Structures are given as structure tokens and as C-alpha cells.
Length: 130
Length: 129
Image (tube, each protein chain N blue to C red):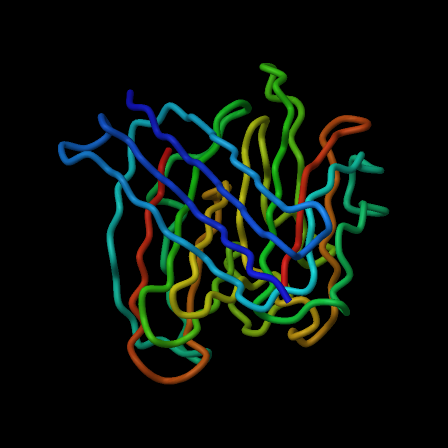
């Protein structure tokens, strides 16, 4: 078993009168599953979307990391991440990342973690930890 | 206009043969946002709106709206970013006490929330657009 530490640092010095500076930590102390990978996404629609992780292998408490490494300035290289195999739950524009918890097989129906791109051959970096 | 810096850091030694060390900075230009806390006694039969999409700008082709949510209370909470009114849906995000999430939000629908057991949830949140 391993420990996975996941930290968010959020800051802004000029958004509000009082500067914002926070740092929060998610710790998974007994992780046995996870890793970082980049994949080329298979489709531009949810049908046939790339399966990033099988729900059957994860339960409530899993943590998803997703990152769109695109540097295109056009805004046309979005990546759509789905938790229910039906709709886009999260949309990542170029440079966007997200950390979201995932319940895998804990829900009524097992739904895999999937993703598809706005353009052909979109690249996504991701990891699922538990 | 203001600058928002969002840094994700992921570290692990021993999970894989190659230790994991990720550090990604997203810098965004925003005009609205801030950090606040709210409490609720909502449970599955009385889930409430945590963030109303109508209260926030929408993303554009090149800009995102970022939602930060942390469970600062003692009970697990579940969120739907798709404004689902049912409970235990596959799209729900479950945040145990102390757990945070950050994601781009389409801000069209609402984000709803409920606790998995009775009590008073304390939720820290921020939306930056």
C-alpha cells in the first residue's frame, strides 16, 4: 500500500480586496491502484468513448485526476469526461485540469469513467487512485 | 480582470515502480470569484442547490468556469454537477470529510448536494469565472 497526496494551491492577489491563498490536501493513505498515463481518445462522441477506468475496479473514495495538455489557442480542443457513460460531466479546455472523487461500483449501476475529444486524436492525461 | 492560479500537485512513492510527482499550473483570467462556506442539513430526500448556474457566467470557447468544493464538515456529502434530482446517481461526486474537488463547471445547470446521513454539513466553495 502507498500514500497518494493530492494538493490544490489556489491563489489570486488581485481578484478581491483580500488576497486569496489556500492550500488543501487530499490524502489517500492506503492506495493500491493508480498511476499517470496519457491516452489518445478514440471518438468525438460519447458512443464508443475511450474507457479510462472500469467502475468494477473502484469504489466510493476513488480520486480522478484529468488534464488536457493541449496548448492550442483556438479553444477547439476540448475534452469531455463522463461519469455515467451518457453525458459529459466535465469539459476540459486546453490546459485545464480537474480533481474529482469517483464512486465507481458503489452506485446503483456500474458506469465506467470515459472520455472523448472535440477533435480527432485528442490527448488526455489522467490517473485514478484508490 | 484578475489572475487566478490553480496548481495541482500529486505525489506518491511506492504506488508504482516509478514514483509519481505531478505539478501542473493553470493560470486563468477571471473577474468574479471568492471563497465562502455554507451549511446545510439536507439529506437524500431533501437535496438542495449548492451552486445555482444562473448566478454565474458561462464558459466561452476559450475560457472555463472553475468550481472548488471542499467538505469541511463531519459527514460525507454527494454532489451532482448535472442537477440530477434523484440520488445515488452514477454521476455523483462523493466527498468524504476533508476531501476537496476542483473542476471546470459548465454553470448551465445547478450543482446539488446532500449528506449521506443526518447532520449538519459544512461546505466550502468557490466559483471563479
